[in-house]
Length: 234
Image 1 (tube, rainbow, N blue to C red):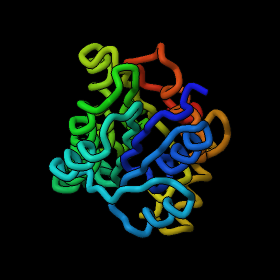
Image 2 (image 1 turned 135 degrees about the horizontal axis):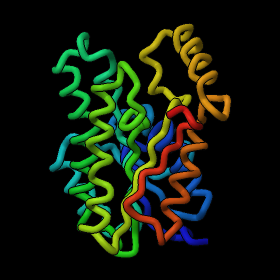
Image 3 (image 1 turned 120 degrees about the horizontal axis):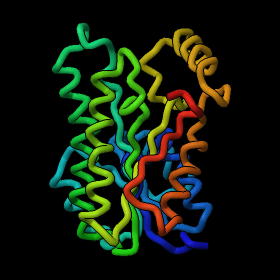
């Protein structure tokens, strides 16, 4: 009931965790709009009876126009991500890491900056980062630095933006299209390997993470927190 008739924007909400969250929040009675760049994903989300908007989160002017048109909102969820910046540092090109920062770090901050004037003072912001920001796993120094840089904003902005609440959810290995850069057989073996290391014994589904985001959106007495949703991997 806490979310009934609230207005929620999910940036990067056309697939994976963002889409699962949109469907869960809509079921809870919220009016949800998802944004993204890919027209096919937007069409698919629209067919699930979600409101959609084609927005490039790397474009500050487009974001300003969108939020100005959309008006006041109650909650903002930023699920914009990137696969760039993976690999051991000696093999990592800094151009690839820079692109990862552009696609995730700057896109999330662009979205937050543009949305801020329109967020209800009793509302919330939830960032989607990743466990690489704290897990200290070899091969994740680049992508981990992107997520770690986002997470450091959370406790600071909780004080700067009060009474607006801001939190982050930090997923581990989740079965989404994010992993599609791997061949199917390699992806399957990777998931099996990770599952053997995860305390709960399985890879997460997007809906698992969506429930944590729902909790942060509903709970009006939590702010400045980063919730690890990695099944015990870290």
